[in-house]
Image 1 (tube, rainbow over the protein chains, first blue to last red):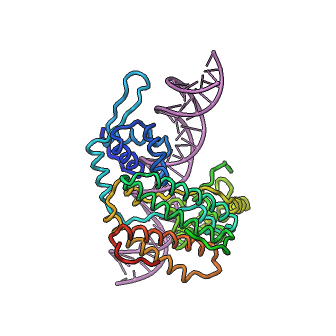
Image 2 (cartoon, rainbow over the protein chains, first blue to last red):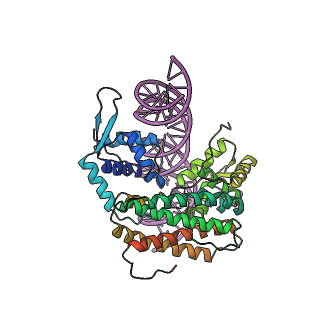
Image 3 (cartoon, protein in one colour):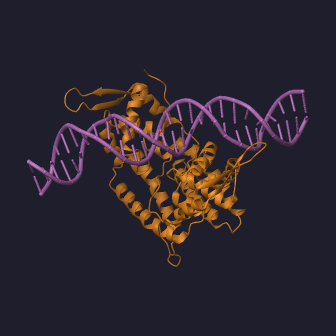
Amino acid sequence: MSSEIQLTATSYVVLGLLAAAGEATSYELKQMAAESVANFWSVPHSQLYAEPARLAGAGYVSERREQGGRRRRHYAPTERGLAALEAWRLTASEELVELRDAGILRLFFGADPGPLARAQLPAHRRRLAAYQEILASCPASMVGPRLALEAGIGHEREYVRFWAALAGEQGESERG
Amino acid sequence: MSSEIQLTATSYVVLGLLAAAGEATSYELKQMAAESVANFWSVPHSQLYAEPARLAGAGYVSERREQGGRRRRHYAPTERGLAALEAWRLTASEELVELRDAGILRLFFGADPGPLARAQLPAHRRRLAAYQEILASCPASMVGPRLALEAGIGHEREYVRFWAALAGEQGESERG
DNA sequence: ACCGTCATGTAATCGGTTACATGATTCT
DNA sequence: AGAATCATGTAACCGATTACATGACGGT
């Protein structure tokens, strides 16, 4: 056992959620993720079954299996897992992400901006509103999630600004 | 032949570049991509060899192989390929991308904002400056690429604003 | 008792990443 | 002539996506 594996972003999502919960099944991870981190970094549920198993094989989490009934697997971070998570938190990397937005890619390759903008704009507006609502009801003690939300809000605002300018709303003054 | 395949974003990057160039080898695709689309949507060079082959198998591009010498493969879009590209350009989808920024993910899971911000900030500033320089030297006729650049600039500005606020530069007034 | 949805996984396929390898040019 | 870099791929592995499947539970 304890074969060496490479930790991916998915690994840290799992480790981060497990560290917060103490212990969880894959289904509980799915629930937790759905209302929090999945807003800006989603992981398909099949990965939330596969990844903890992978992490268990390498000693980053422990696995406890229910005896009777559903025989669900409960995972908890090990010392090693917590250490890996903490090390990851501490690496202040310079790596930048790419935008990787399919709409922008279409623009780049010559799509007509108008229709694209008119499709993207309301969707981004909805998401912006949703983020603001979540932020309003997010306790001040949850510092990390609140910061992530604020980042998301900033980018959604930028998207709205960008697409609005292309959607034929040129005449109107835009306010944030 | 002409087995059915699913077209991915990588497919459209290849098709889009081939449509612009008329014909190209994988290496030429790599060169073209490097200074243009790779700024916000990169594709590893091995995929620029694998993907045209895949597209050729499904009839989206044609393949012409050099006879003597290097026997390089030259690809060109077929009618089918151009039609697929155009159809993709016309789909004004509402799908939104996720932010998927590893720095934000770290914040979410409790990383200390200060060091992270001080690592991310100069990197984003450099990229912002690079984009602005590219835009300045990009001919006005290249509408799509210029729009994509402007989108990138907007988001980099937002990143700079966000990380600057966390980097301990609170006292100073920030101008765009 | 039945039906729908929630809960809990497994399987297969495939694209993407990483690493390796080698022939051609160019530079010193 | 030799070294370094450019040019041009191939191979292997592995994580992610998609689809499939089934047991439990709650409501009517």
